[in-house]
Length: 139
Image (cartoon, helix red, strand yellow):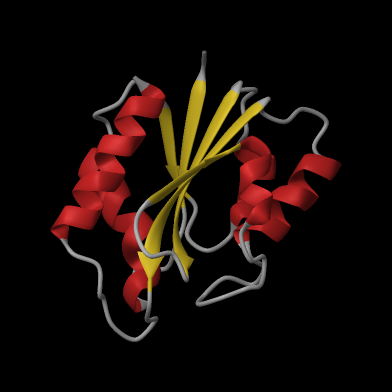
C-alpha cells in the first residue's frame, strides 16, 4: 500500500516542534513518501499523489503519552486549535476529506504529547516511541 507520511508543527514553538523533530530523525529512512508541512495541513491539497494510506505526525495537546489513532478514532480527540495551527488537525482533515476529489482510504495519527508552546517538554524516549510506532505502520 502506497503511504504518505505528513509531519506537522512549528519548528520554533516548544512542544509543537515534535512533528518536525520526528521528521528530522526519519526522513529518507522509510520507503514511504514523507513531507514536512509546517503548520498548514491544507498544503496537502496540492501535494497529494493518490497514496492509499496517510499517516499524520503531530503534537497533541492533552495527550499523556504517544498515541496512535486510526481512521474515525482521529475524530474523537478534542478538535480545537492549539499552538501554532490556524485550525486543528481534526478540523483540517474533515475539510480536506470533503473537498478533495481523492483522499486516502486509511488515515493514521501519531500524536506526541504536548504541554507547552513556549518550551520543549518531550524527551528522546517520546520521540523514539513515535518513530517506532511509525515504523510499525509503514513497515
